[in-house]
Image (tube, rainbow, N blue to C red; front, top):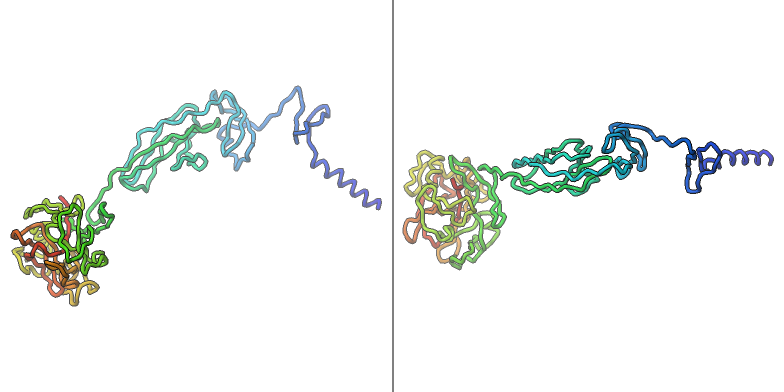
Length: 399
């Protein structure tokens, strides 16, 4: 028992001091009850580590509340006591002004990039930049007053935030905004019709830029009805099914397609019709230009002309065209589809068999020219058709 008592005594003597308060003093004064560690002296002070600003920033993962004396901080550069808190070193000095918010500079924008610029401010030791108004997650820009941001969308507005910072603390955020430059569009890229958000592929054929699919804009009305000038676009869908419009495009009476404008035989036609802004309904002469480019033997005087211009314009295969879809290579990229047509007076005919696309050029008061392609012909046709019939529409880019 004496041995056990001795062991317990030794443990108490060695362990209890680990949980006691500590005073550093020359006269054995006890520490204040609120302090774990107290230095008591009337002749000497407590000296924390002395570091330069650079050395302090090089400390690996500093703990919250870590103290150090910065030898070259403060507004006068003479130094000051610093504490690490909220992820930053802060100087504990009355003579330590927080920097003012930086003023925005002149930003430099392209279609997909912005070089953000701001002006240097007094007392700032660095700057931070962020895509949101959150200083804690901001990117440290060191002393740089410029940030290059890439991968942006053209013709779009962006808002960003910057702070000036120092050991005394950060400034309030400065909000900066800039719009990227207009989109540079080239033929072969898709376009979006802003009226209904439908997307159309495009293709360059010679010097012309064409939509590579039939126009599909407007509100469906039944084939038994006539399209009228109501101020809103109306369309037919084969067999009155919207799903057919989604594949083959809408069917339009000639006047509706022209948006009730007059005929044009010019090249370009100058008739926007119901095409999106920047596009127009092609004249017969514009179709002739394309056909001649595809097949030098095209005469463009009506009827079936040339040798293989039609085959170069038709979508390949028999997913949409009837067999044999003669000569179809679609080497032009025009991708003609056999949407059939709405008969004058109502009803539909020739789906999968016949692609007929209106031009902006009339032949008589009652008739107009159109482009004609058949499943069993390699040629392209130019024909005259009754304006009340409903045929497909294509658009060509304004020059």
